[in-house]
Each structure stands twice: as C-alpha cells, then as structure tokens.
Length: 267
Image (tube, rainbow, N blue to C red):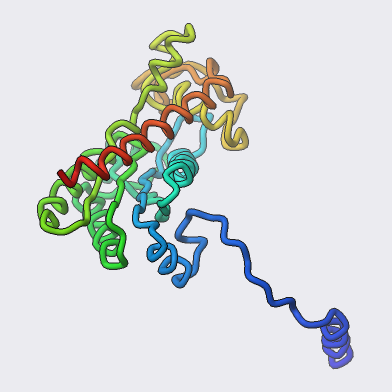
C-alpha cells in the first residue's frame, strides 16, 4: 500500500504543477455555473432567466418518460443563446399529471410523477422570488406540457400584480406551446389523426432529430385514446426533418415572445 501511494505521488510530481488558466465559460445553464459566475453574468447584463417546465409522464410504449424534460432544456438553451443576455434555470420535472388515488390522466401509467396544481405553482412562485432576489428582472416560464400552462399563468399574473411598481416581470410564454409544429406536419401531408395529440409525430419527430436513443422504433404504431397504450397519434409517421423544423419553430416563437414581452410588460 505504501509503495502504491508513493508511486502515485511520484507520478503526480513528475507531471508537474496543474496549469493555472482561466476556463472559458460557454454555458447558459445555471446548474453548470458557480455562484460567482452567475453573479458576474447578472452584473454584465444577463438579467433574463428562463424557467423550463417539463414533466415525468408516460409517452406510449415508444418514448421515454423524460421526453419533456430533455426537449424543453434543449429548446430553452437555444432560446437563451439567441437572446444573448439570458440564462436557463434547472428544468422543473415534477408537474401536474393527474390524481394519485384513484389515478387519473397519465398517472394511470407506470413511472408518471404528479404534483397538485397548487404545489406546482408554489414551486414556480418561489423560483421566481429567488431569481428576483438575485437581480434577474425578466423571468420567463416556458412550459413544454399542457398541464403546466394554467399554473404558469396563475403565477405570472399574481407576481406581476405584486411587483407592478418594480422593474421585475414574469412572463408566461403562450406562443411556445403547443406552437406551430402540428400544423406544419399536417401541411406536409400527414393527417391530423396521425399527428395526434400526445406522443404522436410532434414529440417523436423532435427526439428523432435530437436524440433517437430515447425512442423505441420497434414499438411505434398508431394509438388512440382509451386503447391502453398511452399515446394518441401515429409516431411511425415521424421524421427527423419534421423534428428539425418543429424545434426551430418553437425556439423562434419563444425567443420572439420574450423579446416582445420585455418591452410590452413595462408599458
């Protein structure tokens, strides 16, 4: 043991001192930054923060439970980069998905995690209060799931009323979700039934472009409400090219709405 330790020390000494140089910070994600880096970023003008809300829910037999979390983090990051003066908070992965007992909505399927609407809203409220305390002036709530929208709207309206006399605003993004993706896919010749309403061609195409490892290609087939599979639509109609365009539309619309709201919310 002593010989092994001595060898390790000798190797370390032979390698020389660890070079002291500044690491280039190339991230918009708060969880990848130190508190000093966040403080300095705010002081340098990065005063917009995006709070992405996803969800841990069933997405049929062909798609992983964390779909929303992965997609919304990617898109929020792209929005922040385009804005140029924004950072991204950690994804809120626990959102309203139905009742626990008896189970309703997505809670009827294994692996889904739900929270009551008031609990979800409270998490968003205190995340926003935290960011205000640190110096952020624009707080954007970016929800990737239908069940997230009501809570985001409630929080944004309540805090904007409370903070009306301050320079801080909370923005509930309405242009981002569900966005123009479904209409785009229909315009490419896919029927509305095949596009579907949950885990159909929209999200499947997005993951097919970004991270196909999250898909089970041998499980793709038509699904209907009430058939026990969980998805509604036909993911087999998905393509990576559809996904690329869907993502671009959502990123573009979220970026534009934040830019508008940063001005209009203060008039």
